[in-house]
Length: 225
Image 1 (tube, one colour):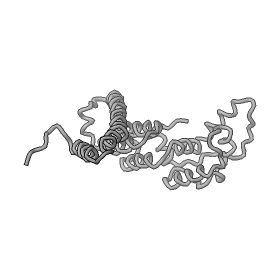
Image 2 (cartoon, rainbow, N blue to C red):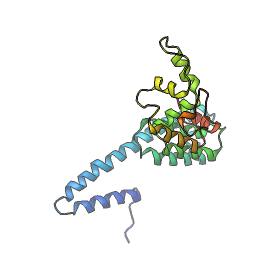
Image 3 (cartoon, helix red, strand yellow):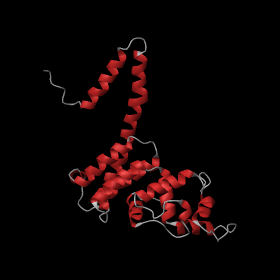
Image 4 (cartoon, rainbow, N blue to C red):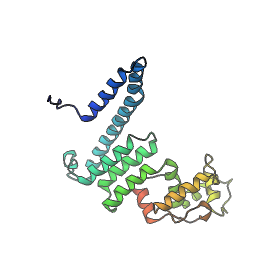
């Protein structure tokens, strides 16, 4: 049996096999092969490349912050490798920049943040996969309401008797109403993840309803408003 060339991976043969199969389909085969190459292969390769470039910069940053840490030593850091592999799988499946940034920060803080348990770190990366940028926004809002209230109160035309957080949200964001059902769906997710203490928006007043798990997640992915 002929040996496979050593410089190719199994995925390369899978790609070549699919393309070859499409090429032999009568009439439409060539067009399908072109479609496969441009619509599927090229965007995936581009996402992988962009992610690896971002990660290379992150490796430099981590090595600068940790004394005597080198890329070679980092390649033997089991927790980093696990986080990198898990995050990479998610990164190529999303186009949302907020999630890419969160994943990159998660990989970085797997090494830099020693206050969070290793198991929790891997769970946080999984949570990123299940969340959307709107999850991030709502979590930060519910966890740090004072930040948003103080920002609004610097506006002389705004009122200061907010009543509950839904009023603060309405003044802060115009793209999603506080009455939109998606808000409660996301809060239910955050509650399931153990990040907030409420299940629906109407339960929130003016104090933080975030949990320590939620705050750790915010720190881990370096979430900002």
